[in-house]
Structures are given as C-alpha cells and as structure tokens.
Length: 312
Image (cartoon, rainbow, N blue to C red; front, top):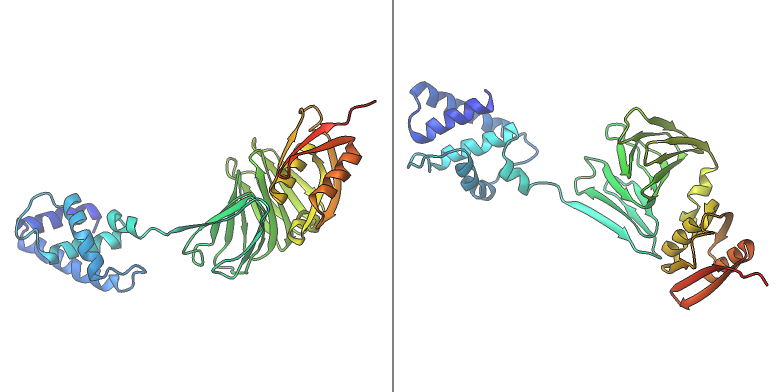
C-alpha cells in the first residue's frame, strides 16, 4: 500500500467515514505494521508515541472527532509513518548527534573512534562525525590529520576534506587541507581512493608513497614521495619541502601558537626546505633567518615580525 493511500484511508478511519472494507484494510495493515516494527532499528516506546501523537494529528488528520482522538488510530498512523520513513517529526528528534573534536594552536590530539580507528589531529584542526560512527564510518576534516583505519570490508571509511573525499577499507594515510586552495592526501599503508567532490571523474587510487594534490579548480597532481616525511609531524618533526615563507609562517603559528607577520609581502613567496625535530621556535626562526637573510623581531613573546635584513 502506498503512503498516500494509507493517509487517505487513515483520515477516513479517523473521521468515521470509512467503509467496513476500508476499516478492515486499515486494521489488517496496522497488525502487519506492528509485526514489522519489532524488527525496526528504531523502536517506538509509549512515551515517544505520546510525544508525536499531536504532531501526527496536526499534519495528517484535519477534522476532529472522538474517533480521531483514539490512541489506537494515532498509534497506527505513527507506526506506519515510521515504517514508510515519513515520520519527520519523530525522526527529527532521532537524528544522529554530530561530534566535533578540535585541537587548538600549539596542540595535537589523538582520538580513538568507535570502530577502533585512530586519528592523530594536527594543531588548529578539527574532525566532525555522527555518534553512530561505528555503523556509518564517515567524517569531515578541517586542517590536517593522520588516520590509522581499522579494516572493515563491509563498512568503508570515508573522509571529506575541502574539495575531495578519501575512501578506504583499512589503511593509514595523511590528509592536509589547511589551505582552502588545495588538499594533499598521502598514503602510508594500504590503498585509498581519492575523488574530487566537484568533478567525480577525477579519481585516483593511491598506494604507499603516492600523493595527490587537489586544487580548488579541480586540477590534480600525482606525486611520489616518502610518505614518512609527510606524516613526520606526528613524531614532533616539522618537515618543510620547498615551502614558501608564507606557508612556513602558518605552520609555525599553528605549531607554537604564535602570530607571525611580515614587514611586507615581497619576499614571502621565497621557498625553503628542512627538518626540525622538537626544536624551540627561536632556534627555528634563527635558522630560517640565516638561510634567507632575514631579521626576526619579537614584538611580544607571542607576536613576531619578520623583515628582510638591510644591506649595509
């Protein structure tokens, strides 16, 4: 029976205008629905039934009568709505709760998810997922994170970040989406499928030491690099691979919870490479200043100004 047909019959049943045959149809259907409801993942208890009676009455039954107010009639309607998936008022109250975990600047977090997968969240980043994650293994990432995914062939693990999704069954990989302009996915173990959200035809299967960089205009670049370098941050190592000074400043801001300004932007596109393991910020800045002929000024302990060194 289609839902429109049931609604029409239920309305006639409620108003007392249904024929005997129609009443028998509704009664028979309700008995069948009650049986099916036992197997539903969402059970409707008495308290919850009572809470949605008024909503059902307001949206389906327009004419009031003593027959309409029958709890049995409303129970039938409520049960049917759940089975057919149109019990909007009820389902709204049962929507999964979204959980968001955030790491502040200067902070990194390790999170164990309900399916035993682990997420190592870099500074100034966040993940969001529903509280039924074990059944629906999907989350959103803002920033950078390393994922170690528990294998489950029946429930793929997907991550949405900026302009792409990454889908896996069980593996470990790093996603960096700290810039809205581009997102980088790097695989450490296993195999992942990366798909552009704006262009589903842009699909890449990645294995260990492969990376894909997806830009805002859906341009994609496949590269080969030691993936250990790209997840070095999980071992308290800052790895710079031909990074601009502007991007380096952002990395250091997030890592040490400071504010870094440039006297002007004329030299911020210059690039540098290097590794810093558990180094203090002053030492890193001194090294960069020496390499790039810069001057570092601490306006406050948390506010740093960088300028080009004046030639004498």
